[in-house]
Length: 536
Image (cartoon, rainbow, N blue to C red):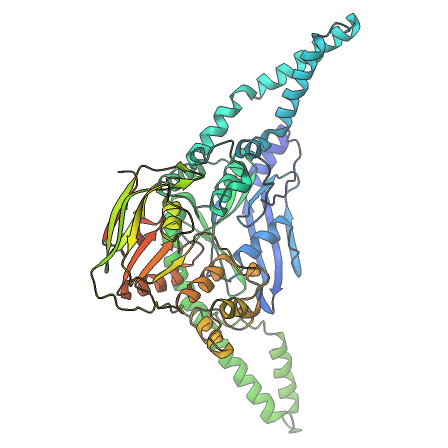
């Protein structure tokens, strides 16, 4: 996780000031990325204690905005000013962390100063027990240990482990094992651990990029309660409207190279945004008509002596007009999964299947059957083994016990939860060509265009694409292969609402069976005709 921490010791008067002052001021923000104007003279003010949701379609610039706020990316123009002394914590799910640490060691890093102090205290006590310590040194050690002990007691050091496990438990991290090495965790598991550490850090401001990804319903509920009671400020990127309604009182929308602040929850924002979008489009059209009228007048009259002055005057007026950006038109991506007929109704038998790692089971034996038209929601809290079951069914992991059998004619398409590519440096075109070598370059571009990956996006390194854009590339790959069974592990992670709708439409029209893992109950309920609950 990348963090920018700016910290001063607050006195009482400073604390009073911070309550009434803006802690973040953005003026004239402009930034272009890969020839796309993301921000153009954008402004925003954030006040202390505000709980803000950041929304916008995939590729609008939400993650770029977060990076600009942390200072890891420098804007082209404009001012981004934090109030001095503010400690800012940033959750970046794609950041790398020390994989040699255990989960507990990493989480304890939030209290490094206190653990270091405890180590010095133990060393001092050890020195006091040695035979060669002098009376003068002993007196100094007694005073020093007393001061260190007082500090540890004041900071409630001996309750830290319990407090760490309370936060970690709320996010389901206890199931991973506190002695587990970070390097042994999946990308989703690492993301949860990074989120837990950020919460334990208790910064003045939290910058959260899709924090509900990789969380199940219970953990999302816990996080919502935590954030709702959070005394500090946070800015949270999310496409989960239900979650935003629970935790955010302000919505900031990134659209048309502007940043606009709305007061109210996500539902209220959606109502106001629809009206604003209509008004903006009408204003843009009026301005374009006026510009065209003035340009026509100038063209007709600039060469005539009698009217050249008037034409020149109109030209000056035209040059002073602040031209509105064209409303961004986002087409809904089109997903479709080719189907190959399965003549029998029987597709999959899972009998007494035991899954886990290194010969250690993580679940009781699993039993279920899948018909040729089954739409199964595989449900359960994070860490219970949903992804492990899917990987075992895909034969990426060996079964520890029991087994499963497919119909001989089954053809599977699978999308994994972690956004892994052969190389983050390859672009969408090269990835598709690698996966589907029979496709021509024209066919590859056409297929990518269907899911909204066109132009510069198709040639940009996949590691530089937004999470939602990466998911759409993966879904595009699935569209090139016929199947009668889809195995989908959290496919809506990172997707904006338009893309979610498009995926739901494609799955609704798919004649075959699918197994869906999703932390969005409303989404899964609308698609699935059966539920397999790992907790029952």
